[in-house]
Figure 1 (cartoon, helix red, strand yellow):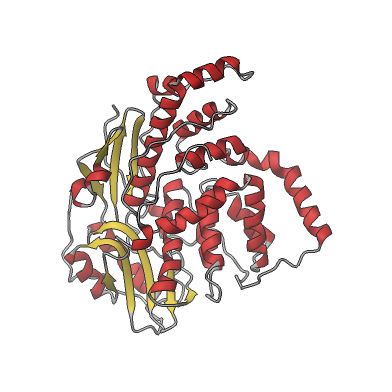
Figure 2 (cartoon, rainbow, N blue to C red):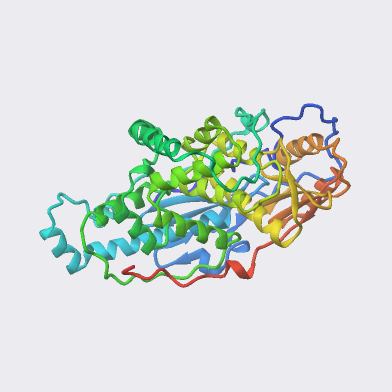
Length: 448
């Protein structure tokens, strides 16, 4: 068993959507009224249900860590140990562990063993081999404190408008496809996960298992690749333990249906066409799709969410943020926040525009309010947050908005609410924690 160790959130010290460019903003003094909190290790069972805490193949460590802006859990299993930033990422890891357990059962079945004997594909490394020699899977969540207070390295100069059709002629489209084909092999090497090489057989297995084909879980990717090499295995009954719904689950499910059904090169090209049709340049579109920290699934979540927010200005600022992410966990946090911004736009208040400057989405509503969605299980007014939060206030100090709200998925401590209020931001916590649309769906059916 790999022991847990304290890890830092990628939003460490950044706290409230740290500034990337504060040019022209009025200086705001640090908030001193709120007492600095030192929450120390947290009890995981305060934020997780019994279903999330343990199952036949996993157990969440009793103690979780926090830097004040989120909660990091450690989930242990016989397949390895993973850290997870928040309930959303934890649920994804648990589903992957369930998938590994199912693949293990498949690989030990008589039908599979016989299929391997008659298969022309050999040798195969069965899932049991993976279990016997688990890899070092525990990864710390990178903090990246220094870079969060600096200006975004990639600047999007184009606008993201509401074009609905690509104006390219047939021959231009053909030329683009040819260009993609020629550069495919070279560009594929840039991707840490080599996701463009995933076969249709593998995608079918990921769909049966209900997990992301472009996950950074190398153990799962190796197991699926091994099983998918054997033809005709479509009749195994998959059994999953249902997990409680997580905020944004509905949007994620819709995206995964697209991902499971679409060839990666075709999906990559479709995303690029939407970006080009929206007014972004070829340079920007390729910088977005070539970011190795931004998986094809997460790219699709962002593009699909932005595509459904017709009429909202400044969406190119979110593309700039995505281009600048440096880790898978950071990218997933951003993609989830963009999806929840779409939900806010539909359910709470229509958005007018996204604003430049902050790492996570900050937008202006049609009523003129400033809003930000914070995807965190818990927020505390720690020394790091207290130091970083004034920079957010400084960034928007000259903005005419009279109302500024942080919509938090999770709970904010009284100290955090007090500190934010001193800086002019109202906190609305426990938002979308148990939204009906995120209810648990039926488990994936085998044989599809």
